[in-house]
Length: 219
Image (tube, rainbow, N blue to C red; front, top):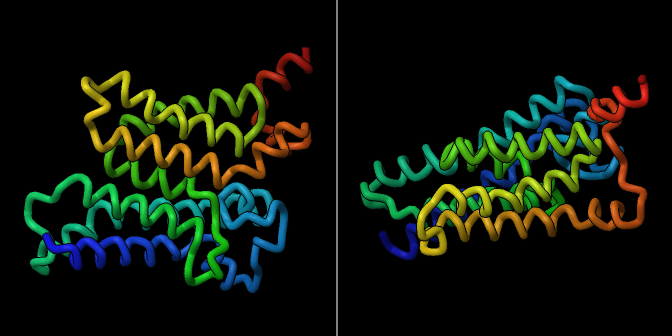
């Protein structure tokens, strides 16, 4: 593998990541959801402002592009002779990081995209689906308890390296651990407005998801 091959792979991963689901689908409806709701071009705002079907399409695009980048794109590079058959995991992780960054800062949409959660889930579905199971368990448990989406996304993302460490011997020597840690910190940065609102006491809740609260209130 040459430096040029790695550069091309990362560049293509970023460009594919820049294809933002909510903004692409929004063009078919002549809307820009960045001008609605929270102003974020992600799945949560898509659900709140456009409904379930639109949000589902957004998630499928944002998750699907990540899966494509970490599975089929390297395979294509191998077929073209740009990568060795035995692909170094670091190469895949560089591409994985690039597709997430592209989603958040898309060149096609003025570098104003989503917050990266769905795209990161797509990456992990391809690389470590067991981790995804734990992350969703953490996220939905907290969602049911608190109703917060953004802050709980951050907690789930930051729990990923911890979960990996508990399941892996000599985890500090594993590239995957450091990738998960960096991505967790990155998602904390992209969700900084949610964390700021949470500290100020005005972060919005997904009230319908607060099942425990609704049950106690009903009683």
